[in-house]
Image (cartoon, rainbow over all chains, first blue to last red; front, side, top):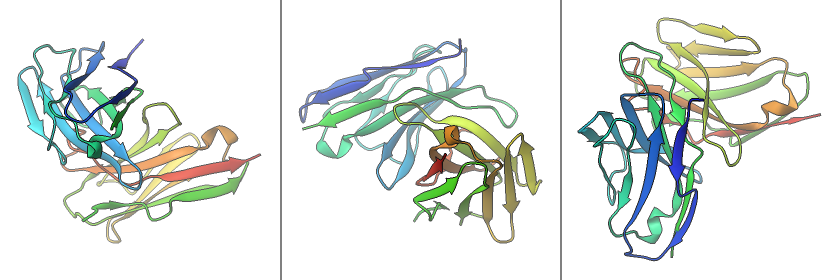
Length: 114
Length: 113
């Protein structure tokens, strides 16, 4: 079954305590991305990766880091989380090349920073 | 500046009737448009898309219409079913890719039995 798996699904953490949200896909997709969803703002792209070792900033990259050492994994790192990073985070993946490739989203990770 | 706008936060329709969800965009470079559906506690799922070379795309009960001159697209669901109740996101990109999607804020559709 095609899957994008995120962990943890729910997390409450304190300001400044580094955390990593993992994302893994089993579809051999080249493209992976992170989005955050906030009330009244829709989904906004944080970072994306076109392939291993190739990453680029999205619309709201401040306060986040990513790495793409393996094709299937794309972790999101919050080095020093702050309350304004409290949000619902989605990882996504798709094939590249051509047009109209379907993006598959994970189920989301609820992050609360207190 | 929001480049993709869904001005109706919510919409309520009766089962069996038509649901029309609207989306406006400001960036004339957008040439590929998508609709995603999202249920609570789940990730968004792809519903239907349209390229700017078309003005209509149909998939079963779902039809997307694109009016490039008005920078407007709409999603029609006919007939609406209670299982269609979800948040619908409009998204757009440049160059027909999924790489940098710009999403609207979403519209909550409620279909009443």
